Length: 188
Image 1 (cartoon, one colour):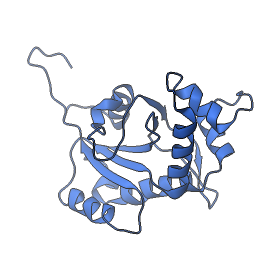
Image 2: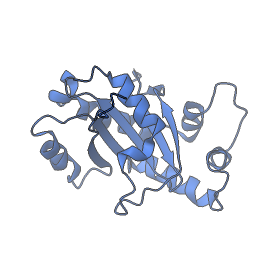
Image 3: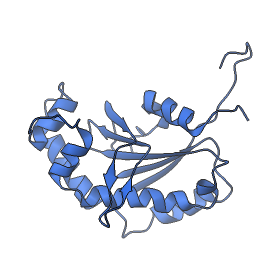
């Protein structure tokens, strides 16, 4: 109703990643975060896909965020669920070198995985542990998947809860609703 696009919501989340409220103590996720938008990701079948936001946390978590407005048919038809699971399986299949190339600029010199992760979090004193944990979680599919929207259609939360509790799946799946508001003085 405010006339804002998904790109606006994506930018808002990218610039204010804490808005997602992932640091709830239960999942061990804590910042700081390094975030990327629209990374080029190759599926095991050779397709190219582009997750909206991907973040690596200092706690060794990979977080994949798919942003949808409630008016988007992909959210209402639940296609977004297969989309975000596709991202997770593609990250899980990526090699260490694939990950470094994906997250780095094209002109990056050869670096080890530990050097790459150390460059993301230079203040950390436990880079080897964080790098090892992050790599293990990615390859085991223990990823944090987030569908962020302005309003979820009826039944979406229950559907995602049902998928998330399946014991065969290693990922954490969250639905985050970000409710916009307008200031009384007319500012955005």
